[in-house]
Length: 130
Image (cartoon, rainbow, N blue to C red; front, side, top):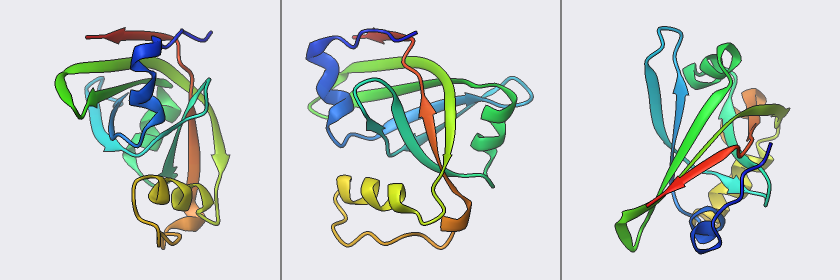
């Protein structure tokens, strides 16, 4: 399932804005962290590692929500709800480098934890906005 992104909110996903990604912990509380991301026109992709709690959360419960605030108007936001569709290996940290450059670090290099790096692919199932 893929939800339509309102066209006037699409720049919040296509520009280099920070998002806040929520996942569900094993105790059913929510974990939210700021994240780099990339929207490919259909799904949202994040760089992550297999060694962190958010990855373990998604293995147990694939539900995810991303909130992006308009940097020009903090009262305007887009929330995207979906689920983990895929986990793609990124052992050279190439996607991490691409996102680092997208977010302004032209000299971004692969991180030390590259062997544990993965790309989390999130579906877009529902959106809300203000």
